[in-house]
Image: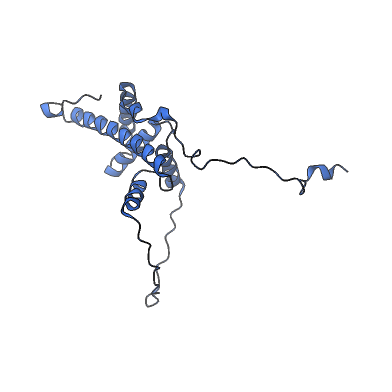
Length: 183
C-alpha cells in the first residue's frame, strides 16, 4: 500500500539548522540613525502626519500621540523592532476584547508573600529600564538594544522637528522664535 510512504519515518532524524541568537534580532546597517536625517524622510513623515491628524478620530492628546507614533512606525517601513512593535501593538489593541477581572469578594483577601527579588548590578538596571523605553526591545541583547535605541532616538528627533514645525504653522508663524524649518 502507498499509505506507509505518506507517514513520516520515525527512524530518520531531521537536521535543524542552527540559528545564531543574534542573527534573528540583527538590524541591517542601512537603517542607521542617518536615515532619519534626510529631507525626503522628513517631508514624507510630515505629510503623513498631517494626513493622520486631519482624521476626525484624532481629537484627544492620546489619539494625536498614537497617530504620530503610528505614522513614525510606518515611515520606518517595519525595518526595526520598535516600528514593528508599535504597529503590532496597535493591531492587538484594536482586536483585543476587554475582559475585566471580577472584583474580589469582601473579606476574602489573600495575603501572599512575594519572593525576594534579586538585586541587579546598576548597569543591568539601566539596561532593563532602557529596554522598556524602546518599544519591542524588552528581550534583546545589549548591542541590538543600543542599535535600536539610536535609531529610535533619531526617529523621535525627526518627529519633534516635524511637530515643532506644524505647531509653528498652526500658531500663525508670527513669532520669530518658532520659525523652524522641517529639516
